[in-house]
Image (cartoon, rainbow, N blue to C red; front, side):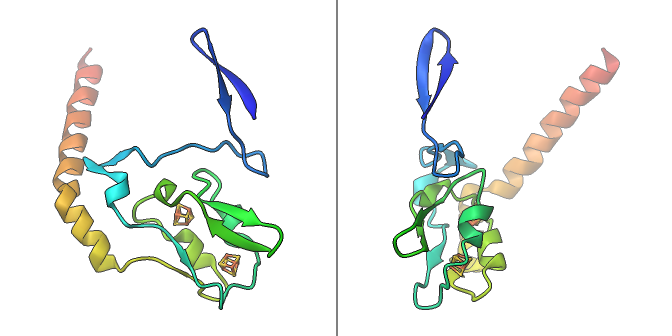
Length: 136
Ligand code: SF4
Ligand code: SF4
């Protein structure tokens, strides 16, 4: 644990075994959809996993994994910290032990959230702000 000052209040920031700050992103929204309604996170096939640790060590910012030192295997402990659409750990796994829902499933969430239209709108808003800044 480390201390941080938030206003006058001391806040404990939990850290994992590597000293990486642990955030809980499960209450976040993804383009207006509650993150916990989106089933996008890694699943590990322990029959295939060889315990190399690359997934655990690679997912630094979101700390989705913990490491089971007894069995030398990763554990998905914060599934909703996983970035929607990311599959880096699965791509890096040497034995294809990590899986995600299909791209079709992902696109259903994208469409349900109207993420494309919202992204476009956001960029137009930012462009207008930038134009205002340039004039000012
Ligand atoms: S897909 Fe990306 S964010 Fe999700 S667990 Fe793997 S590396 Fe972390
Ligand atoms: S990258 Fe694959 S083989 Fe390595 S620990 Fe993770 S799941 Fe297991």
